[in-house]
Length: 159
Image 1: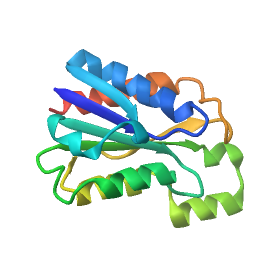
Image 2 (image 1 turned 135 degrees about the vertical axis):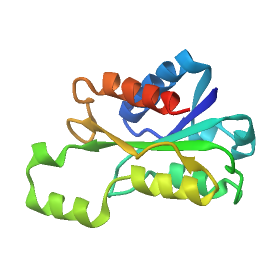
Image 3 (image 1 turned 60 degrees about the horizontal axis):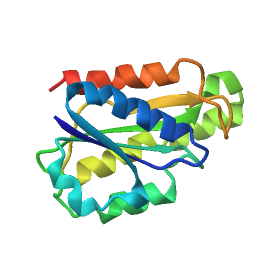
Image 4 (image 1 turned 180 degrees about the vertical axis):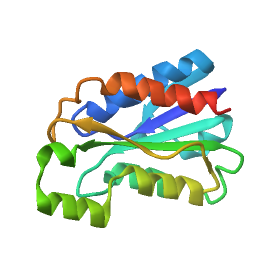
């Protein structure tokens, strides 16, 4: 299996998750990771699995990820397996009613990333995943890199 992890990262946390996913996927074949600005969407056709991720900011993905996903030609992901992830603050730890309401209303970045990948023809491999950070700038919550690797292994095992 040839896998691509494409990501945006504001403070390095999502990049760390992307690399943990890539490293886990290396056990199942070739795997690479790129920031959205370093990869041409026209090259997607050589990959069997495309995993995309972004931090959740303002209840959505970063603009660079949106630009990347919008640049994928319609139908270009046909026959490709896709998956989406994000990094986010754990609203249960924050325990803020307003933030909880806003998350319920608008959600996190992974779901819209998954929708865009599917709209371009991709077949969603499994539900989008969210990985926790302790604060806006991080650090990642303890154990999240391990959880990301297990999630990635689950992606590969479904094939």
